[in-house]
Length: 82
Image (cartoon, rainbow, N blue to C red; front, side, top):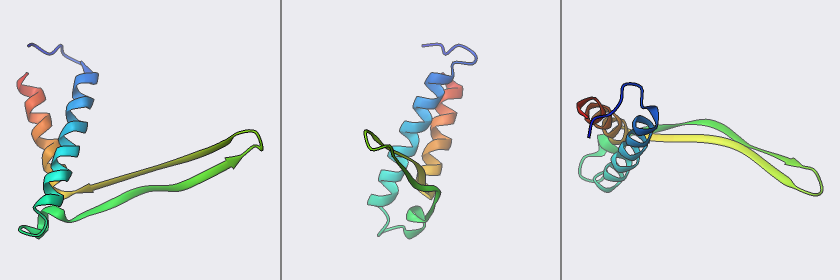
């Protein structure tokens, strides 16, 4: 499969999958290799907009550990090789 130059959907999906699998592996191996489970969370707290008819909640939070970042790097390398 040859990826077209600029195919951002494939890149985003690969990066997301790499981050998810990396974070899962980091959480699973966190007891054996504690540095893999080290991470930070960034984002904003949820904001609630109550209009009496509908309630809308806005918020965003990104939590990555070191293994998740390694997963993103590996996914990017795989994308470049496609």
